[in-house]
Image (cartoon, rainbow, N blue to C red):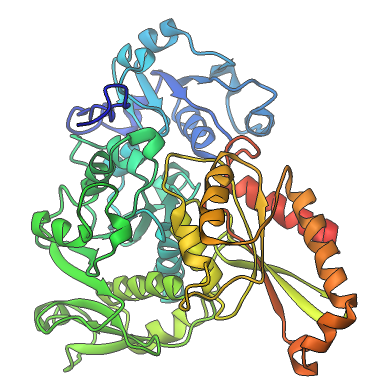
Length: 536
């Protein structure tokens, strides 16, 4: 029986079918409230969009004008905008603003359940719902718990390199409203969609992607949902309105980490049973005969099996239903290879030849904040390479980052708790005979870090810290590395060749960023700046 004081999951809200605005010209002179101006670009893009279409806009945010200075300055200094139609309400929300608005543009991170301001709105839309209502572009939609951003970025890169006029937006911090009017039936749009963005589409019947992908599902955002089932139910909305002519790509492999208290270790099987689209699966091992999708062999080579019916729709003439579509990659890590393999499958569905897919994705070098190589320095005779993996906000992703390089790393981790079981980090780096154990572990202070420390003590994992800032953590690391280099005892342990092999320093927090940073991107940028300051 659950605890009587245990928080309840949010009540799902169903929005009216379609969009409040019947056409883009319908926006003119409407009174719009943008709820959540923010710093990530979504709120600012909505303000710009509605001003450019002749609306009266009120931008409201609980953050102060000082906190939002970057966004406010960007809008106020843009002479192309009619800012006489723009009002700011910062540091507060007023109920009358929501009551008097024709339509409220909602921030995806705001719960509808129990929100008196949203309850007072006549109509609610989001930048995603507006885009889907007015764009005719074929949509490639991606959600999941980890790997979303890498997957969409690889798909977008592959499409552009293959000659498509493609666009990328959504949760990856680019609002699709910024390119809405450049899209048509020939311009594929890749959307990364969070569970919150999907929840804001419930009932609207606007999301009908040509291709949907759900990457690895593990517990996430449980401080918001308080239920794994509620979280996954929002993810399912990505395929809710697909038809047989569309494609849906789901995980084939079971994973105990997916459980989240549900006793379900294979969400892909559940999605496949419910979805009306043509189902394709992805796996780390060979798929059974008759199952369509992609898999890897032991060397990491990627294969695709598609039906003759699917292949017949593609421009190339191929006799084989099983094709090699992925070989060598620049980006490290087995988990990254799985993301790129899904991107390869999307490119194949879009008609790109296997040979071209191998060539193009073999050149893709990853994205910012995801195992991003950004700095190199020498201490003594040893080269140290620094990787920023700040977008790793779940423990499983951080654990995988420590194993991605095939050798021990200097592991920097820790942050703010969001209601997750953090034990996968300790389990992923402990000396159990299977893991690659880090050379050293450095902890950044935070509520999640406090939970990690308990796990580390149980597993006998040594650590330094916790440190109260990135600079303090990096200074300690530098001091340790310099001491190690100058230690005669340490130098005798290493052969001359070993000393010259580059060593890896990876910052992969495995937790959220709030408190010390604005978001994970700010955290990553601060980390990169401090590394260059401390290590030169």
